[in-house]
Image (tube, rainbow, N blue to C red):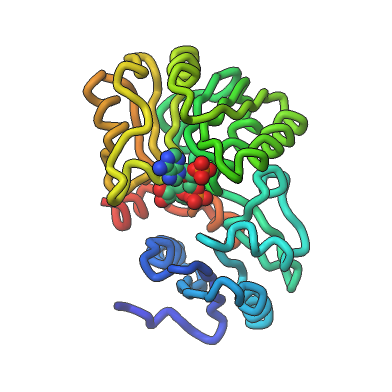
Length: 287
Ligand code: NAP
């Protein structure tokens, strides 16, 4: 490991999460900085959930240029920040903080990361209809950015549990703040799900279902059709059961690896002002 470029001027970038040490972000950002000859080093810190405020104040004190947030801090960090970008306000979540001489601005680049990975497939979001499964932190960031990027209609399917009302309020906020109509439907209503997918251009799984032990698809194969674009923001495994069905049917499909890459590239740009060399990072960190 070559650390000889670190010197007295090197500035800190960081990830705060719980857990945090599994993340690919330290490798991605430190390699990008090194490739461009920029004086930054990126480290991951596992922080206890009730110590997020102290962690943020410590990074500010140490003049870190910025930091990322992952679970469970995307919402709980907000009270410790000075400003939020439009996307972060709409999503109600922050994954990137920029420190400008002690003034902390919270942004969310998860939605940008997803939308950029979508654009890379040739899909233009303007006036399109999306069905999205899930309404968690990643889903809300995607929905907010998709609405800002000109999507005409977004239908959210989620379980009718204690967070259903919050999702209704979120949908109302996005509908009121953009030109996109956002509705929330019960995931258990299979007929509504089939009907929604049948009239959508894009289907996105933004739940945890399809990874780890929960190795299922929330939609049936007969709900898909060949000209539907199917995406899953899970990147491990690379081919979830949903994507395997899409592949069988000959649909255009993609997983969450590029979302991860492009959300990182947007954070990197916000901190350093430079474009991340994404092709090189894709080759060294994602293959
Ligand atoms: P989260 O905030 O915990 O949200 C999880 C969502 O999944 C919730 O809407 C939840 O539904 C839904 N869900 C969980 N189990 C379900 C089940 N059995 N049936 C139906 N819905 C279920 O998590 P998150 O941060 O949004 O992450 C979600 C997924 O995205 C994870 O797999 C994560 O690895 C991935 N992710 C990828 C990237 C990337 O860059 N590619 C970035 C962030 C996250 P309810 O709302 O009904 O409870």
